[in-house]
Amino acid sequence: MAICVVCNKKFKLFEKKHDEIDYSKKIHVLYCNTCHEKLKAKEEKRVLSIVNELVLKYLSNCDKYKKIAIYMLYDEKDLYSLFKDDLLFHIDKEITSMLSNVDRAIKNRQYQDLDKVLNYKNMIEIQIEFLDDLQKIKKLLKNKNTDSPYPKIIKSFYENIRDEEFQEKGKIANGEFVRISNKLKDNITVDTVLKEFINSPLNFEVDAENSMLILHKFDLSFRWDNINSKINHLKEIVELERFEDSLGESQNTTPLGDYTNLDGFQFEEFLERYFRALGYIAYQTKLSGDQGADLVIMKDGIKTAVQAKKYSGKVSNKAIQEVVAAKSYYNCEESMVVTTGEFTNSAIELAISNGVKLMDKNAIDRKLREMNNHGSSKLTSTRTISFDNDECKFSCPYCQSEIILPQNECPQRDEESIIQCSECGIDITMTFPSSEYICPNCLKQFDFLNKKHQHMQNCSK
Image (cartoon, rainbow, N blue to C red):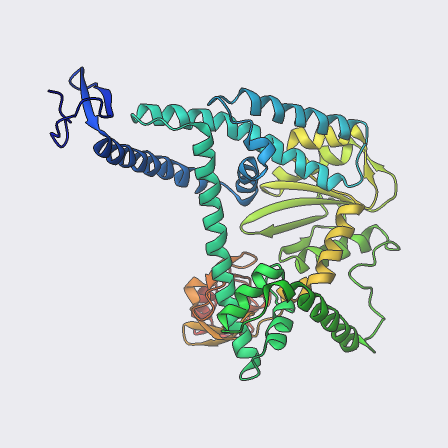
């Protein structure tokens, strides 16, 4: 009589059983339905664990743009549906066709915003590159005696990227809770919390989901179906308050958004302030002999050579060639050309092939609108720094809590370092003024603050 190889249960006549091959012993074995379901669930758990391990390792080496490109392969259901028959042929064909359409639009100037279309092209190219990696991941799984269809692997990528986003949202929400609590003290209501959230210096979208998340942190309740109208109403109030606060301000200086009447040198100065407002370290190169770059900017440890073109015509290949050379001269990782005009088709093609970022008038204006709408200038607020023995003290720009940092952990001169506020948990990109690295007695310059203060103890001047 046939029995289950796991529980030794004897099978009744016509009872359902599962006949499978034990490849280690090269024999057929029988499982009862209960044991088969348990083994199936155990195997699925094992496969999922191995897939997740590979996916997390892969994602740890991806920047945010690549993660977005991968995320879209699942989130865009028309694309995800092409991962069928456990083949990549259909999805590869569709994405390659999308890239051809974008290239044709660029060549024929069938676009309104060059920056957007180049970003879209970049995302498609990342997806094509990822499909090659996906094929290798599939082979790697088979080498580990694990088989998982492409749709499940893509779903694993999607879920891990989504979970990472949720964790980041939770982290920012905790930071906002501390900052708003410190700011409002006992004046905690739905309106005051949401108004302060709208004024947040963090890059956190003020939508229904995030607003409800913040209110939940304060144990405040509000009807989900009314939250959008409440947000829009408070945004109008905040906008009027900002307008009232700005009444009577001096109009002698050129506003950040007004660059149309500037000459070439003034436009370079405008861009220096523009990039600083976006959180970059930025400085102009020499007015003459600039070696193809008018500015050098740096953020998150990545240095970029920037060439500025202030005119209404079309930028040619020459600007691309010059900034590529400047990238090497200034030891930069990236390069960029910014113009108030447009780019010729050949300049766009040359920029794409050399990895040069392009910004035209539309891109500048769009970013300026975002900065004005979200108050981005607050991100570059000045921090008062005090020194005590071997420590430096300053306030967190978000929650205003005091941060104490050993001098040997302070950023190097003209560079950035990222620290975390112990109170709100927000990561802060820190840069100190260059004047802090100069001995006030002998005016000697130093790269590190602790070296400067060691010197000052024995400075004879």
